[in-house]
Length: 184
Image 1: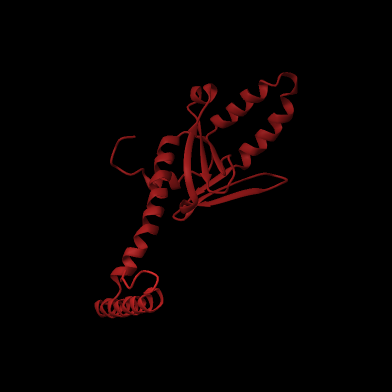
Image 2: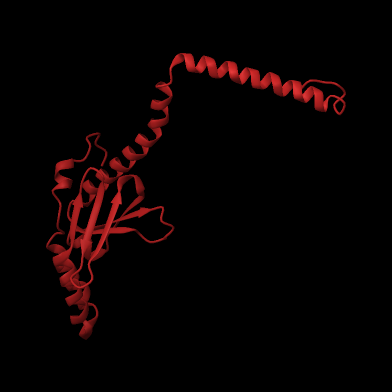
């Protein structure tokens, strides 16, 4: 997207479940296994019906599972990169997967958001939040430096000048014979 308008935060926060088209995708992909399609189809059916997303001010949460519950929580500050992937069938169904990577040391994605129709808006929103979290972290030292009183910097400058003068005196006393009596 090339618009300057930020993605609609309320629309992203409203997403809690994948699109019903994801179940169609799961059925089509399990049919590719031929006579063994029934096993993966059962697994994918329960995954679809338990898959939940939550977007909030701090980060993203994704959970799923019946017997073995799994939950992943990521803060926006931990996000390193975002990839959008879709194969031919997903494009035909207007779906895509958003792969969110962190600096965890793993080459695979930490979280894969799938079954989303608004994948471009969500990707743009995540990029905006990821950049905002990083910029907020960088702005913090500047804000702290501005909070230092002016008198404290004058005092610090005077102390540093005294330290430099003492170091020059020590250099003269110790290294004067080695360098022919020159100052550095």
